[in-house]
Length: 78
Image (cartoon, rainbow, N blue to C red; front, side, top):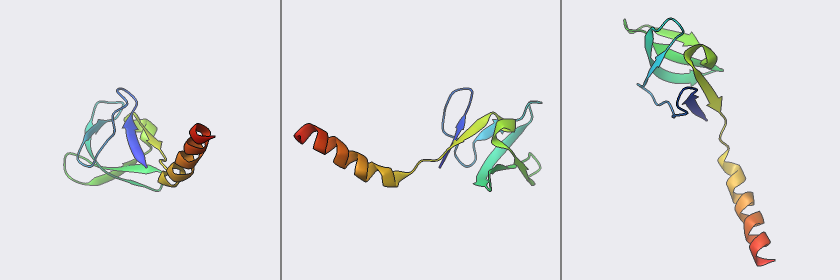
């Protein structure tokens, strides 16, 4: 799973700064149960929906890569 910014489509990592609509900054901590857990400037954790911080979630499934490679190999060999 990846968290990305809407503004520049960059991946968000732990410790990166994210901003709410009022311009307050938070440090990204983790993704939990559909929400982003962030730390406010005073260090206390707070939860937001990804959209409230200008982010979105991508579910990356690595298990699809194996079958995709097989299909591609069959296409070029066939």
